[in-house]
Length: 436
Image 1: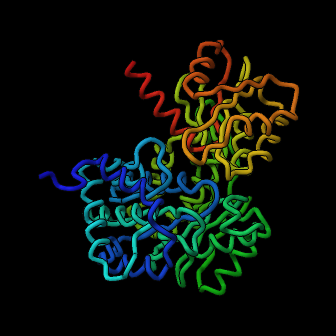
Image 2: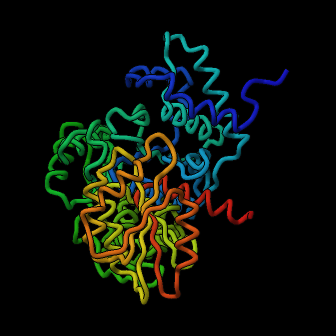
Image 3: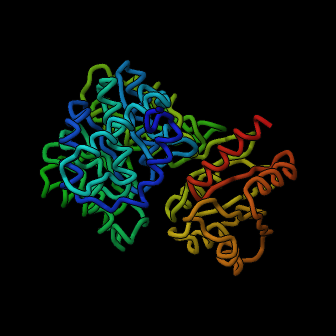
């Protein structure tokens, strides 16, 4: 008789089904289950990241520098684009199906024997625990943890022994859970702080800065804001951006990010500031420079085909940052946008931003797959009031993608944005087309 869950696919199916039979757990139950697991990876030096935009990018920059320094690290991020294994990266490599299945079985067996009645990890909790099991297995020295939603009540926040906390850009997203104002949202994100643990954040929103400083004072965390004046001499090139960053011990130092996405300058700078605070002698200035330059994070103004870019911008602030980068791209032909999103995003506000940006000659709309997808009729309605550009709707991504590529001329630029789910579907489509 075959062992239950003896394949990666079976394990992935089980995890995907968990929202149908689980409820949101209290932080106390989540913490008790982590204790029951034996606190896997608690001894790792934890770098904890929360925020609205840029969390995954900061994680990627941190891990790239640690790898360049010869330091082992594990990275837990979300969401994934194509395969669930993307959420677990050890020393720069996505975990194997065998390791995924190993961690899944460890967590599931503990769920079955856990003494608390009717407890089962949520979708995100299950994956978080799997990540910590894997990081324990490989005995990584540093653990880079991205929060899922919020911070204070996030499953990853059961970790108390942290080396540094990073709060990225705060914006309006998930307001039904985090609050309707930037201050309330910032307060939830700031919940990852701990006494005596330094926290790094961008100092560019007065309301957000005030909340973070107040929370840090109450908690006993030491703040290290990234001021506007800390970054200067930004030089945008074809596929890289050079900039100077003020370090605490070396004045201004030159860095390069290997992307055309202007917003990555701030994310890379936050990572460098945090790495400085680790005071690890292996993390030298040349190591940081090399690590930042070598870092790559999928789906963030990524050129997947010549002059075809995908970007995971999915909320108002993310779209503004996306548009700022598009504006700086040199284009001799037409700019074409393929857009989609999910139901719970501010798609009407985003539609206005995209339509009124004056950057696109054509906007194409397509529905996503899955239950959260916004219907094509709703998408088209949100753009209908705006005129002055060509607007087209397609029933499927493959039809839209093939049509755009077949009509693309030399000098044209194609941008695909609106959701990381859309980026994932594009990535999966490209893989399937490669095998046609």
